[in-house]
Image 1 (cartoon, rainbow, N blue to C red):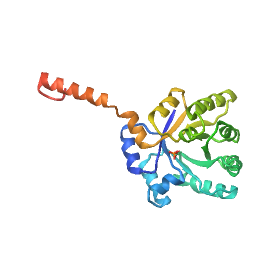
Image 2: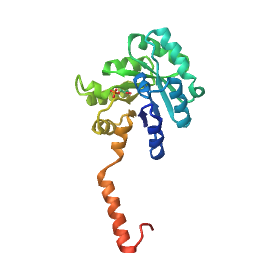
Image 3: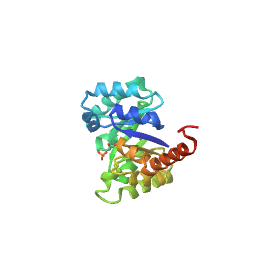
Image 4: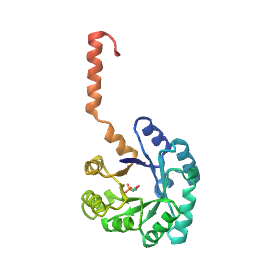
Length: 221
Ligand code: G3P
């Protein structure tokens, strides 16, 4: 499975990559604006902080068919096209653009998905990844259950498209989708940190050290 970080914060990416096997980074236009940097600078920094084995997944901003195609080509040459995926929202223009971008040999992640039905059409349009916005879907129903259902629907038809679950409010939502076997997921740094850090672990480690020190007068083997 693939686990991506949903951020353009290169400091956070660097920190997480130090201790976790992160498979790459996803951004969107809003995430890039939040960095306070020019997009070109963000992409340059991502290329610097990530290895070529880690994917860079970046989104088009244009909303018309021709514009989407042109921007997809622009994104596709970042880092000489190595492990680059272009995000395209599942609007009518986006759905029309997905097969055309795929035909150019560019990998596509269909994004902004609010329903399994939109995801179905993006899969049929040959997208490589489908990004349902789990937490935002929870405004309309059980987003987690709908995404689990989507994973099963794709398997039934043998679609190659992989779900890349996105938009999370808490660890529990992430946990449920991992338990359901979601093939890929993108999560913001603060939620990833919460997945890893548990106060019980810190207490256990403190106990190990204290007991060892009491018995042997040192804190190492
Ligand atoms: O990857 C999609 C994601 O960035 C949207 O997340 O938290 O804005 O709903 P959010």
